[in-house]
Image: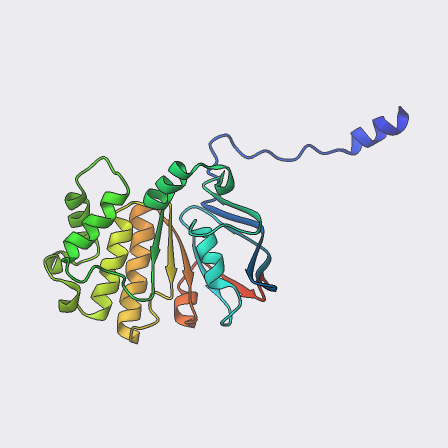
Length: 244
């Protein structure tokens, strides 16, 4: 009994977060991903853990084959881990049904790819409105599109199809399409990889405006030191793990 009392006297109650504290926008907890082809196994992620706070911008860097793209596909609910847990806004994706996962993919997560990924026959407004309609917002998708295009200085290009836009404008339309959904997190996979320095700077400013205006967390996968330096934090991945 005396030993028990001494132990209790040494115990310190851990601090509890405030009741109104926001959960992390994204958590990957000890995540593994193994790809199998016949008898061959390739381990892409080896116990990777990452936490992204609400409204935080994080650059993910690392050599080719380090696991960056695999991490993005798991974090964006496009694939499932072999082991470990992925949480969006405090909710474990593994515990959600397909209907709820579809809602998260449509409304809470947006992905911007290296190529703009726009519909070539649709105007900028129509591309953004199509993305907004996926989020099932309580407003007209065209109104949401016009608002997003105006925020990013593209209102005069709204009626142009992608072939009538510059590379930088195309990528900004893709970002506006993400913003129109008002997502919790925006993932950007090498969003400036095909742009010159001037357009890279413009796209980075657009991503910053997305975070500041729509309160989204931004996770950027990049090889560019300029892009990485523009983020709040830089995370380095090698051999399927976070190393810095």
